[in-house]
Image (cartoon, rainbow, N blue to C red; front, side):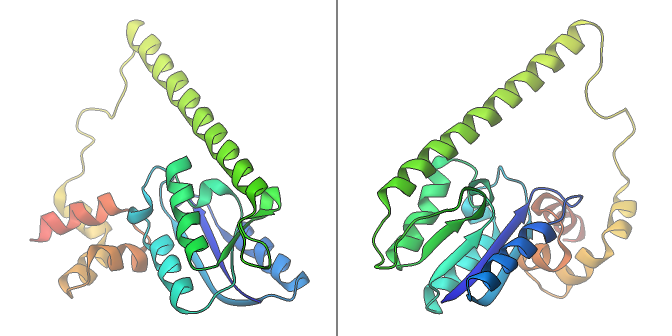
Length: 206
């Protein structure tokens, strides 16, 4: 069985090594052939279209006759229920099952038929995840408001904004690639810098 692995973390300080290694071990135990591995560091708040490696993975599995996509958890493949189900639908249409390691569920059976129970669980799990994120945002907002009411100041200190020259020096790799004609998406992939950073550098060197 041919499979690909997709791993994602939200920030540069995190590492997707653990996700990938556990999925590789799972593949070995099941005698799966790992055809490709897609890894990216990008915010969980981004849409599917804003995740270069996710989109590249979807295109890859569609044209390379892949049987299964392995990922660690649902939040890795979509920021909300709609985004997750959109990815699953794309895979289903191409008879590619999605395996979710931490819940040990997958979307299709061996006959390429949709597993109704897994679809049901996926919708519940992603909805619960959305609810938890909303509650966290509300708690943070409430904390900020309480802090401000008590005289606190939220945000960067005055004078924090970096000098443009210093910014260009710090991100010399981005500057070099953009000047060579690389696209923003390709530059993000090669440097592992965020879309915001690359776009900011691009505006400075135009």
